[in-house]
Image (cartoon, rainbow, N blue to C red; front, side, top):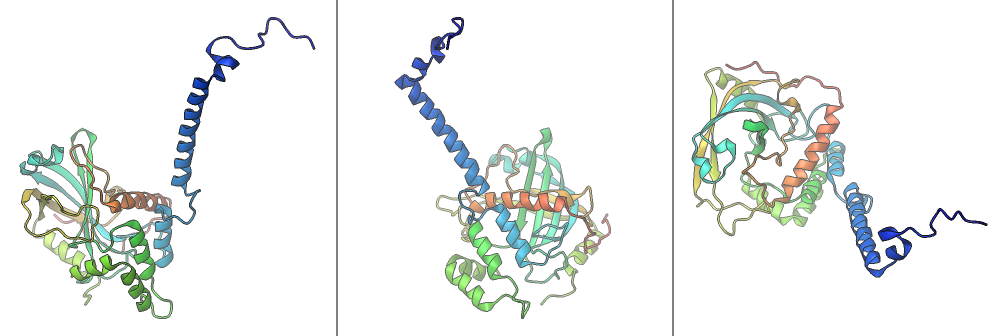
Length: 322
């Protein structure tokens, strides 16, 4: 077969076949291939294709839904709650530790949520209920700081795997409606850090008595909390939230959170805010606590699912305080 003399048999220059087959070029191509393989593997690992049994945020939220009754439209945890509106008055003392705008002297608007830990919006308040305050600080220049605090001295587990196994252990047995004692004992035996933490965590009354009491309190005027910063010391555990810090740490009173009103969850207030603990402003960095990234990922899955579900009114209905 005749060839067209105008068509070169081998491209000239750096893209010619002989150039591409040179050792240096082959090495570069090999490096590129390895980089692409690494990127592809990272995506595959993140998607769970390489380890279908691996615990990830989707499996964690799936477990929440499996071990508890479904409550479409509500958060998969901290389902029962009310929204709060107020401000944070910084006294400027926190600026000694951080350049974050939240610690500069002045007032910053805050929207937040007070809640009870658990997957049911119908759970009764109780003296043993874990209470949570989640806050969204609206900072200058479009920054935000979101934080969620529980009234516990320590966290009962140290990582996502422990949290998952705790969920499974506390699943109510069909016959009794309560967790199986043998399964709980097995969990505590496998997680001595959880048994130790629970020992540090110190009769239900009216179903909504905590929320009713706060409503009554706000009718007398705003409620206030102080933001106390605890300064860490060398050797303080930061990667295991089941371990407490000692009491002899320097503290700084950085200012006062004022809650002027609470209101039932609805569109446009705190209901649709994702209180991701990794939404941080410049000047605040996360610690090496593995639960932070686990919570952030799980919150995202929970938010996405409930965003597409039909919303029903919160069982906790309160009037707007003055």
